[in-house]
Image 1 (cartoon, one colour):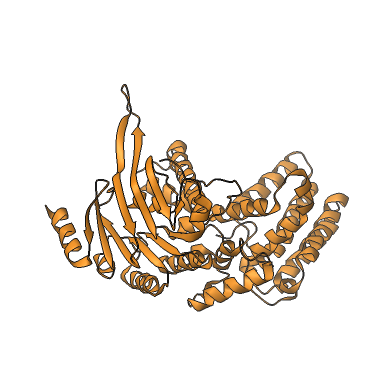
Image 2 (cartoon, rainbow over the protein chains, first blue to last red):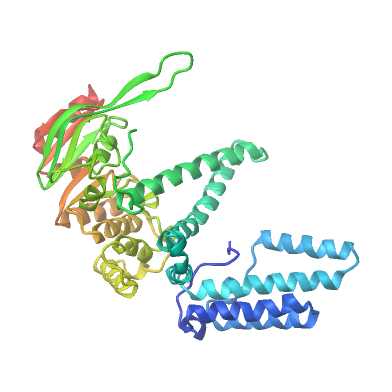
Length: 211
Length: 234
């Protein structure tokens, strides 16, 4: 299933060639005015515009426009709530603005490799070095987080299938406990892998542990 | 060269209503590992992984010392890990970045500060191993063998003096196992590999058999593997 923001797809579109700073600016230009003004036609126009931009990336409409089920559910709840309080048009505006923001973010993520995004972020927070923030370490932490998302989703799918095979897929505790245990195991394995490569060792002594 | 001087690894296992049990993972061991290709074989839970993790300081000995080119893993862990690259059984645990190129780049971070140059070198290293087409692919989309080859490329990118591999072929099919075996045999560094694969062990210059935390046989592949087979079928 397509994720909310989607992974980078190599290509040669104008958006692939655009600098990451310009893409962040485009994200703001496309999503902010509609959110601030709150006009139905402006929101729909911006949504159409960003969908047009995604179509121009050449990564395929199914991939670039596809929305995961969870987001559809969220949109339905938001619109449903507005309909209930007798403001259906406002519901459409909110849903269109949310979709515009998601698509504008996706325009960045499908056309920019993760390392370029992270490098841009590291550059952006470099001034915080003065107050003790290590930008490289923040970048590494974000990269690890991005890397862990598919693993956790995969882990949840495997656990659900195993539980279903034993007729226990309706027991939330039976599903969550192994996922949490696996997540902790993954965190330990990632820590060992980083240590084995000598990363995250600014401290004078090593990271070896007594078992 | 790696030296283990009277190394012992002991853990306490908690026990309900009693004193913790003292469990010996590695019994007192003294070894000099100088051969170019060394294989460590033994049953599951025999202590192979702990023995290997001692070699780059991922596990510290309860007593004794592990020296890598004279550097003690206890006090000079960082320098030791620069010298000793470690390949894990499960490459997904090892590949900590989202794509193959990002992961190789991560290994180069310490020595190549310039991002553009780092990227160029990472892509070149992947290309050398025939992995260029996977550079921007998610590590999840690679096969087990491709992941393990990327992991090996990442480890070698840091230019270690010694490569330690903990059952690198256990999760692989025959084709991928052959790929990894060939890749490891072509590596210029000293290689120490724990394995259940007796063909890989037979290619080594020296084989160690580990059983219940002890090195029970140590020598040339032929007689040592024979003693292992006898031990396992006893």
